Length: 139
Image (tube, rainbow, N blue to C red; front, top):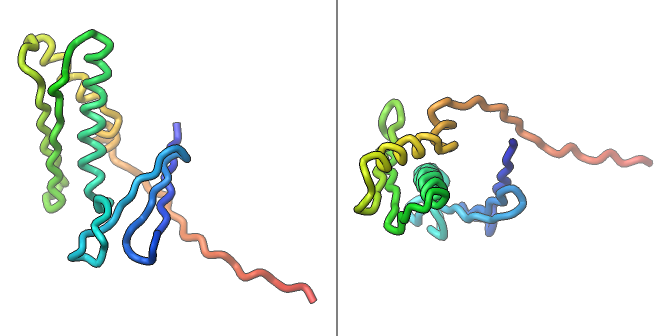
């Protein structure tokens, strides 16, 4: 399955609107200190957000299917951009009252997050720069 994101610069600054699969629009920007208007997270900040929401969603889906109440579920991701290799510290906050077997199962479910799997597997890039060619005039 292929997914598409198209980022378009808006307003001449560092703000971008990102069309995700033709169904959703996200906004990114840079902080004022870098010349942005801080109207959205910086692109690199979305990496931690994507991982946190993916893990939380996988756990919530599993819990919902099994009738487990996880109203107080939250996932915190700290992304260290300076470490080599890059590092994610993940903290899954579960509500009280779950059994040890449920904790164990939810740990395995968290590991199935597609974003986590992609980050662990690594990536290959095929990058192309496309420049329009001037139209030829026929006399």
